[in-house]
Length: 426
Ligand code: GLA
Image (cartoon, rainbow, N blue to C red; front, side):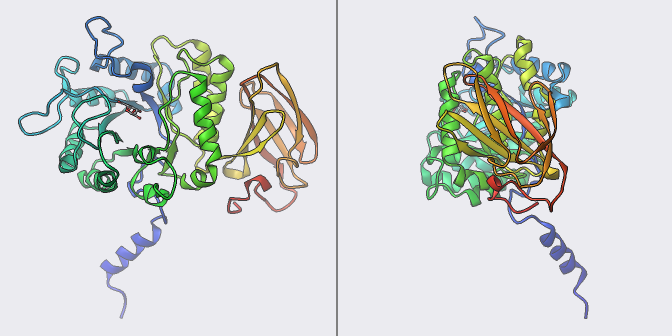
């Protein structure tokens, strides 16, 4: 007797499901868009700063810029609200409501505005009694209600922060919110701050579990508008790459926090470095800058097509630091689809542009291969670079040189670079 059709159908579904990853089918590549927090914080002073405060106007204006200035076509689709959007009290039904003066038309109308421009809306809540900024939080008894509210409003992403809750409450609440969001039937990307509140490392953080319930997660401290802050994040993520790198993949990403390019703290070289290193990390590209006044030089970095293509590579393999030289040059490698790869040469020096000489062989690439190389920032190409050839890159202080490599002739059976020995052979 044959297997009953219903059982066969269930089996078929189970068999095609990937082994891990939150099964909402979302964020197959790292999410891209704009997030208010780093640049606009909890500025609720709309009387004195009407264009700089957390209000519906800010998000509408950012949506206009994303839609009209070429961002949306490149993939920057999310317009994300962070903290301080809510009224200080829930309403009579216990529902979260936006501040009536700063969001007079409500979140549903803002979602409609954003959707009409081909964009998506993200919102923020906090698993706890209060948000980090002191607004009403989502306590355990409110998880389902708030998930339903966000879905009814037409929200497409939720960042769930973790101030004012215990480790025990977080262990219960983060998976519960995943179930509650799925139960709404609306596709909502789920960003969890849980690991950042638990030190970001095992045994307190279980990355296998996170990959099953969250689409992305903040692992570490908040980014600030400074190079020191970027460096501390880079140091932490690459020092802990053995733990973090395998946790990332389509549908489930590490989040080193927002891009601060276009603000006040980074030089031109440092801005290029943040973009390159976030791309190596397969990080979400969530800009937090004023898109109404951004300078062309910053925009050019954020709109670099090849960079975005690399960040959004469909294999979704996070890269790693493969070499730390005594000369304070560091080399990073991210394997990409079609046997391509991205290399970043990063200088921590503070003297002058440094001539770094190496070869692909020294970087672990397979012998006997030949590559087309494209410089991601200046577009220059090198054709037929052989694994054994020495080459020199000139890396500016706190800057990067970034290469995109595709194998020209696969003289031998395709192999991942030796430096990428953590990978299954593609
Ligand atoms: C925490 C988060 C930040 C931001 C603020 C808002 O610090 O890590 O990203 O959301 O709360 O208060």
